Structures are given as C-alpha cells and as structure tokens.
Length: 170
Picture 1 (cartoon, rainbow, N blue to C red):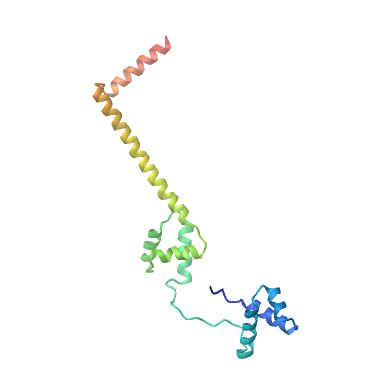
Picture 2: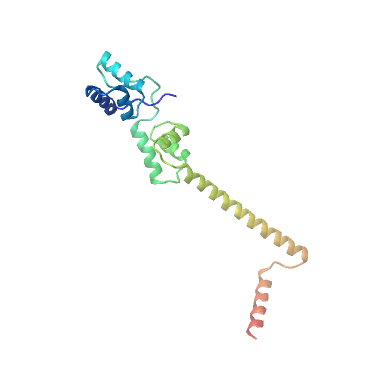
C-alpha cells in the first residue's frame, strides 16, 4: 500500500540534516522515515533541484470548495436534514450532485451526520409502531366488550365512575 507523500517541511529537514553530515540511517531514525524514502528525496534534489510534489492527473471533483462549505452549512443549520433534502436544496441553486457525493463530502469533513438521521428515522418508526400497537389494543378491547355484550358508550362509563365515587365517600 502506498503511503502519503512527505510534506515540504519534512523534505527540508532531510536536506538540512544531510548538510549537517548526518548519515541516512540517523536521518531515517530521527524522522521516523524509511531509508529508501530519504534516498529518494536526496536523488530528486540532485536531479531536479525541486522539493515540491508533482501535480497528479485525475478526475476533477464534482463540487467546488464553496459547494462543500454550503453542504456543511446546511447540515450544521439543521442536523436532522437528510441527504435527499440537501440534494434538492443544492439543485434549487443549480448544483447537481448525487447523494453519495454529499455523503462523501460530509465524511471527508469528519461530520457525523448519519447517527442523527438514523436515530431520527428509528424514532419516527418507533412512534409509528407504538401508535399502531395502541390502536390495535383499543380495537381488541372494543371487540371483546361487544362479544361480552358490554356497551362501550361513554354514558355508561360516567355512571360507573359516579357510583364508584359515591361508594368511596360513604
């Protein structure tokens, strides 16, 4: 697996230590870098005289830095915003990106949005199922009462509660 390129300050430190007549082994141990990396940096300086990393070609990003900031600001304003809502908001201003791109941008900025949205969805589902369960229980109770011949009228309930109150007071 390839590792990341060395930063410019690390490369400058390698050259500084080499100019101080430090050995490759000492430089590698001091900086925690492989000896082959030290050699590669020194050879590159010798051949090109340049320390900067080369620009790599590749597919350009779909979003600009400004659009990335806009995605983050939308989520920071409302942490319960879904990726679909962010996508439609961006489309309204003329930015066409996929939901997976939005997820990647949030992940790259180390924003943990998914936990909030998952909890929100689970909470909505839990409330919906709870209401459904209560409704089913009420239906079962009313069915049981009608089978037993008990009227479910509110007047009867009021008379029963009045009778109970009278018994308690005496």
